[in-house]
Image 1 (cartoon, one colour):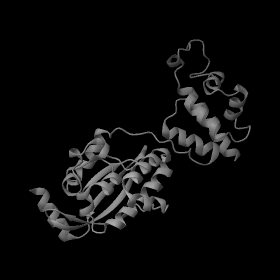
Image 2 (cartoon, helix red, strand yellow; image 1 turned 45 degrees about the horizontal axis):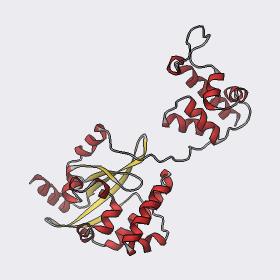
Image 3 (cartoon, one colour; image 1 turned 90 degrees about the vertical axis):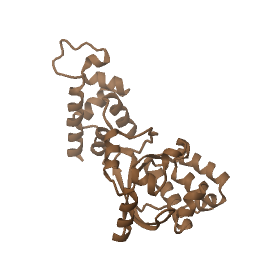
Image 4 (cartoon, one colour; image 1 turned 90 degrees about the horizontal axis):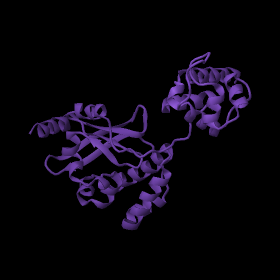
Length: 272
């Protein structure tokens, strides 16, 4: 524990020294050391200067999550730095804080586009689809033709007849996505947002309401998906879910042909 507190103090001292006082309108001249003073960090974090000094010196006991959050804000830490701060101070990451995403970076979109024969999407914890590649548009759903608000896996599964008809076993898939939604919501700190979506879908779909009330939790990130494609017939796809580094609010789902025969038919169809 003492080693962790010493590491916490060293981390705080390092990050404090990296901050330019001028960025806060503070005079930078006549400072014996670079960065902010301890009292200035304490003031920004709204904690006692003595308590903050003890933390940098590796004594005073473990800080609370609230104190660590305030220090992280005061030092303008990145999300990765905030997580590191919590691991040093409390031995665990901070509680997830869900921030609604508006889109993906061009670099992440290029990753999707490079998967030319594998459908791939980027989804949020509320299962809104933010990005997709050409293969996903042709084999799964052409999200570009759907209003932004309707680009949600749950809304499509329970209100879109074409999506429902394409599933080999709709009820099993529906149970999977409802259980997955509940698990993702808790993990990402998006329980409030998911509760609002669940209330909406429960009003319009008795089937969703029944599955939601079952309280199933499904965290499986891979599996087999069977579809009936309107042009090339039945296809089998293996799917895997990947975390997007630095974006705890996003996940990438990649679908690969499960058999060589499926791969050949998909490749021929996409080539047309």
